[in-house]
Length: 141
Image 1: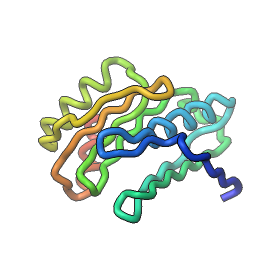
Image 2: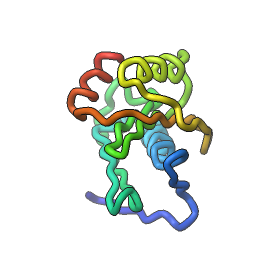
Image 3: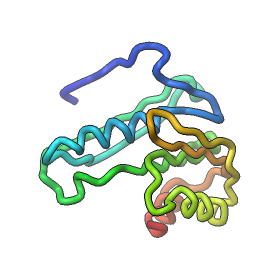
Image 4: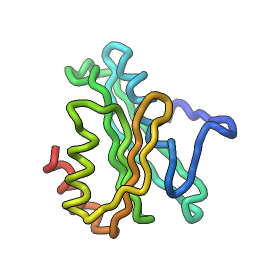
């Protein structure tokens, strides 16, 4: 890790219905990959203390990847029973993905909002094996 940034109080909104950490993560990713040659390599998110504290780790690389200019969509499967989809609407992806999540995981929408110019949709689901869930999501795309 070469840089660590601490965000001032009041930037994040956190509740079961609305959490803008995913939106902020996609906005940061979009901004970095707008710099010629930079790509997002890895993203890891987590929470601890019963969800009181959340963290997001983004790893970027300067590799001039051909998809580096594309906007990001983030899907997080949380162990607290929430699926969060954040990013920009493109080719009706939020509607298509929400319908698939509702069918695949019997998920129900608990909130939908916009922040920092990006969309966020949060769904409640019965938590399943994260590897199986991630593989199913990959197959969707």
